[in-house]
Each structure stands twice: as structure tokens, then as C-alpha cells.
Image (cartoon, rainbow, N blue to C red; front, side, top):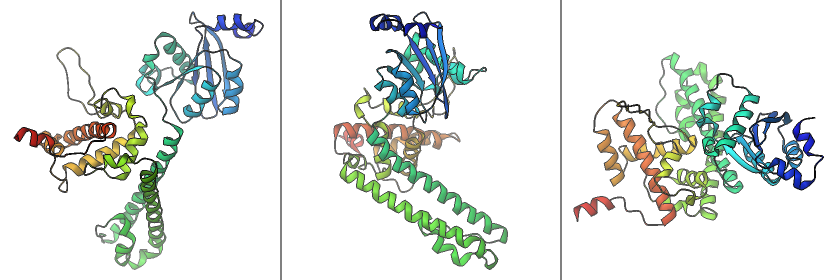
Length: 365
């Protein structure tokens, strides 16, 4: 009989005393999850496999006295952390992608990952780079934007497919907005390919109609539940989708002590690999939410592009691009996206009216 089984024979006070300092690591799998229990001395007292479902997790962790439970962030971590927390445990959701001890282990497997999570949580929970899940309401609304993004990507692939099918015949389809693509290119399709391409064009049109519905629903969310997204849309280049995604992804603006921390949170800060006198320039870290980071980069491209209006942010980005080098424009886009994230967070928490040339006027005065 192992130590965990023996504790079931004790009274409640003895049980709590024996489990004080107990740490549990959970490696979440799609069907099965590995659980590792460490005693206060760091010794493994129990390891087992449970089904990855709310029912199994509830039944298992209700039998375990309060402990510190560490698990990886992932597809199942939202409901798993909620179920474990409801059973009276302290839950740490680890950003395992930042912990090389876990994701770069050459002996990596589910059992080892569960042990690693438990040991890191026992030593110093900050080593797990804990994350916090957004609210259920924000997650549901954000799912609308992610579903729309999946449809946009599918439409782009179908448009590229049509262009690829036509090119071998020597015909180059004219440039067109995605929404108008089926109508504009239909008369250019060679007769022999119309049977193959007609149904694809119908699917492209159907996707465009569905995307329009999602756009309307996003506007409805801004008008009814997330009015502060209007503050972010004061910046030219930031549309309703980017503004809404920014608010939904961050969820709580006060979780950041300073606005400048938002850029790092979204993976827009430069990576570092300094050692002695060596300090090479590296690209951005690309951590955090990929979807929002992509939207901010698209906005930065617009701000620096030919249609971007005059602003302090545009001038600053163009100065970076003019410093030369074949990667000057790329660095400028990343820098503008990072500063844009800081600006949007500031507008969100202050509710100020945005003046795009405030710095220029101040210097002139």
C-alpha cells in the first residue's frame, strides 16, 4: 500500500497535515492524462493515468486533499483548471513552451512531463511562467473572430487554387478583391476549365457571404458589449476586428502594470542571446497570442504603407525603415506593431481622445 492510500485511513486533520506541501503534476493528453504526486520532501508517492474528461477529473481530485496542482496550458487546460480548482486545489497553468526543461527534454514523454511539472511547481512556480485564462464570455466572443479567420484562410486557399488551375493555359486572372473575385474572373476562365472551376467559385462566394455575417456580428458585439473597442479604432489602420480581438485577448487591461508590457506579452519584443561582448540582433520572440499579433502586424503594414495617414507612429516607423539594410522595413513593421499594442492599451485604460500628431505639435511648440 503506497503513502497516498495509507492517508485515507487517517482522520481529516491528520490527512491535511500529511498533504501539506504536496505537489501534483498533470500532463494533459487528448484522451488520457498522467498524474504525478510528490510529497513535501519531493519524493514520488503516486503516479497514475486518468481519463481526460471533466467527470474523471472531478472524481479523482475530489478524493485528494488540497494541494498545489500544475498542468500545461493547452486545449483542455481551461476546463481542467476550473474543475481542479472547484475541488479545492491551487492550480498553476504553466506556459510549458517557455520551459526548456520540459519541451526540449530528449527523454520527453507524458510521465516525465508530469514529474517535471510537479518538481518545478514545488521548487518555484515562477519557473513555469504561469498564465491566466481569459473569462468564459471573452473566450466565446473571441471564438467568433477565430472562426471568421479560419474561413478567410480557406477562401484565400481556394482563390489561389483557381489561379493555379488557370495559369497552365497561359491565362493570368486579373487582380481583384476576394469578395468580388468569382464575378470578376468568371468570364476569363477558359472553356475547358469552367466545369472544374465553377463549383470552386461558388464555394468562394459562399465563404464571402458567411464572412460578411461574422463581420456584422463583430460590429454587434462592439455596439452592445465592448463599446470601448471604439476608442481603439481612433488609430487609423485599426479596424473593428483588430480592436475587438485586442480587448478580448487581453480581457483585463489592469493585469499589466505598464502599457509597455503588452508588447512583450504578445511576442513583439526582440529576442536576446547576449553572452559577454556578443549581443546579436535577433527577430521578435513570437510568444503569446499568434492571432492578435498577426492582426497588429497587418495594421502596422497599413500605417507604414502608401495609404497610411500622417502620424507620429508612422514617422517613427519610417525613420527605422530608413536606417538601411535589407531587413529595415521588416524591423520597422515589428517595431510599429509593438508600439501600436502599447498605444491601444493606453487608450483602453484612459479613454483619451487620440491625437495622431501630439508629439510633433509638442516639439514644434
